[in-house]
Image (cartoon, rainbow, N blue to C red; front, side, top):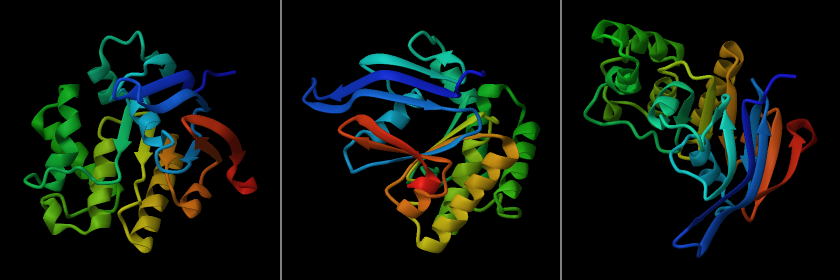
Length: 228
């Protein structure tokens, strides 16, 4: 049996010298190629968990393995973030002064690609997310849905096996949100990606293979989306 894409056990994380407990012994396993939606009320630790999986922060206790990397023992977390996980945020976090192509190229500098290789890969990825011909557009010239598509292309820049998405449709209207979710699911299937998505939206969660419900910093139920 193959190793899970993500394995987290007994993960604890608090803030403000322990006064705010975000995760209180979280356990999670995600299989390779699985689409898991994490749901729960605001403040239950969903986004904190995603940030730990992306190595944007470190747990106080517990173990996390992602793409066969033990994050507690990993000494090159920048390398890990560049090559093994892609992150999509609720707000696209694009640099407004850069073109769509230049935003997508930003993570590629860690790969040592030359300028031509970076441009060619960015053009290909923007075409993949339906933005062919918009390579030189800057974020203010794009709609909210288009900006989020650029953010998805950027998350895929280094061809990571795992994609983490934190409320990727939360700032979009229903139609733009549906298109972004369709795109994420299509990319997951065509590229055999593992997708972990945090959402408040039951309709978004229903698209997943499995729904993990969180409360008070712990997972308290995991069901198939069909049974939810």
